[in-house]
Amino acid sequence: MTEQTIKKQVAREYYNVLYSAKLHFASFDICEKLPTIISGISLSFGVIGLAFAELNSKALASLLLIIGIIGIILKPRELQKERYEATGINLTDISKKLEHIYCEVNGQDTASVTKARADLAQLQAEHRAVDTMSPVLMSSLYAHYKVFSEHNSGWMIAELGLGWRDKVPLGLRLTVIGGLLATLLWVNPLCVTSKTWAWVSEPCVGCWQEQPEPNLDREPTK
Image (cartoon, rainbow, N blue to C red; front, side, top):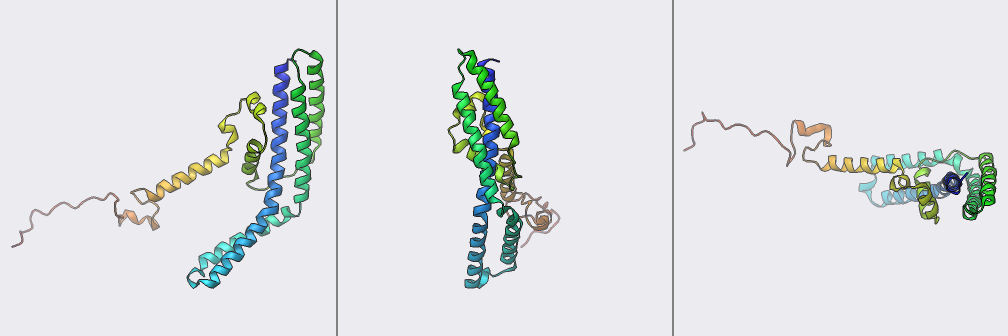
């Protein structure tokens, strides 16, 4: 096995381990911080609704109810946040060992390549033995941010040839594109987002509408 091959394998395993670690840390952050944020938002909107009668509406009550339901759904995961943190720490330790292996590989020394191959196999076994947990919803987007912003992983990016598509998850790209399309549909001159497609029968200002033909038989006014 050549130096380039073993380095690429180490970099690939490092990415898998590091992403899994950040996925658990992201889940831990969400479980720890989101319930507090939800409680703060609910209390704030409740106080605002009491202070301003015009804001005390069914829409606000429905929004607060939805936020409360999200908090209830997240409660079982919140009780497991310590496990998320412990698993993330364990995986981070493995990623540091992989980075050390990468730095120790020397193409001029065949023994270093052989040792790196044996160490890589051992760490892969340790990675498989880690008791991972299912991630929290939306934690994958946060994990991508953590992988490429919180670590100096330029060597991994260069080794694997990662580009912006690898750094920006597909879900985030689709969300941004969907938001842009929704914005364009909202401001477009056809007003397709107006209530019950009212532009079909009552075109809004600026929308295209067929102008009535002039009545040539009408007598001119005196």
